[in-house]
Length: 482
Ligand SMILES: [Zn+2]
Image (cartoon, rainbow, N blue to C red; front, side, top):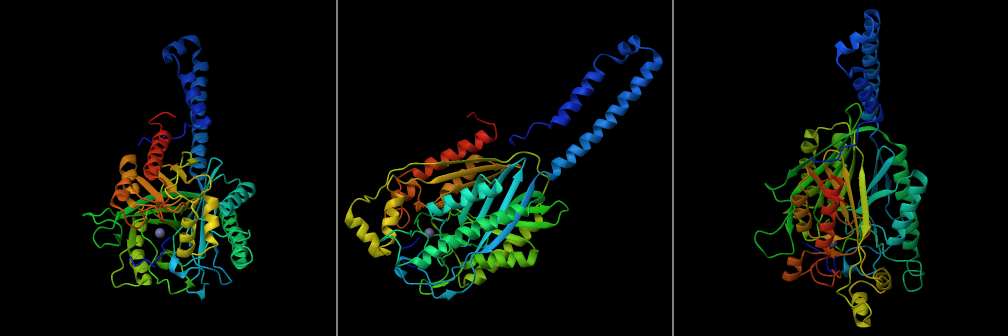
């Protein structure tokens, strides 16, 4: 969020199935003792019959094992669905403070919720990419999660925003002075948004089909796609990973691509008050049409990263990015998944660097944005700042780490290096929104995103969360104990 327009293996595989355990045990029992000892104990004819029985047993249980292998191959399931989440009435826009509470003026391009559901051995995980400035409010997130658990048994989810600055404000609530009366269209939109996200996830669940999965990445270091807008250090930290998770149908046909890339979608002027997914919408559309697949975009740790567009507008930038994604996606090999999904989520409790009880502070925020937002912030931060960290380990040394804020890229760069996994996807703006999480060094350097005005959380909070993510990933791999 900006007060001004921004121009700027040791993977633990599941134990063998009960059937393959059973097969090993029978083989062992049948072959225990030497053949000569067995021969002495039984008559030749009986021995021949035993041999035939032995061979039959092998073939029989191999048959079972073959079936087991086949069913293992098909027990990993993936479903996808999308819903339009563009507001249908004029509402205040999220992102640029200089727009205050001015209402939207139409639609440049539609906003979508893209939902992916993964299922393995009864565990379901939803990954939802939203063309919004932030993840839905705490109240909406809770409602969405309760409903997808009740209707589809989905207990785990990454519900994240692309961070477009041309989506609706999501902080208002149905209380006097907090949105009620003045912004009822926005409150109506929240019901619509919750319904559409739930509908996308439920539909993705109904779309579940046997699938294969693979991942790949490209380091975009030849032509810069991002710039660090915060630091004056040289060289600046930039997470240049373009990471793609590829899902194929069981027959090998491409089904869905998940794209993970870190750069603020702030390519359109704040003066334009039409809804837009920014470069993310163009990227998704181009990849989807070219590769005939569905696409989910998950924003990375872009707290200090802007898109480096040069003379390109956001559409050209999205096209350039698509040109990088498409050959990368073609190269990714997928394979059958045979081990479980491991997922963990926790909330933290941090103190605030901002004294929210000071009326002058609240007034200053009210002037920078608009008054009805402030009591909603105060309510959210009343008990401290409570970000979420969601960690999942998928088969094939693929980790997903979601964090509920604008994490500076160095957090993701360090976590990827320390975790030493084949693939680590970092999702910012995920499962809530608790503003900026600079590194300690960035706080020391100061500047926008690092200062307490937009980063109220205590210094070092991001590092604590990343340490926890690292511990969880080592525990999930069985490298360290609980
Ligand atoms: Zn931002």
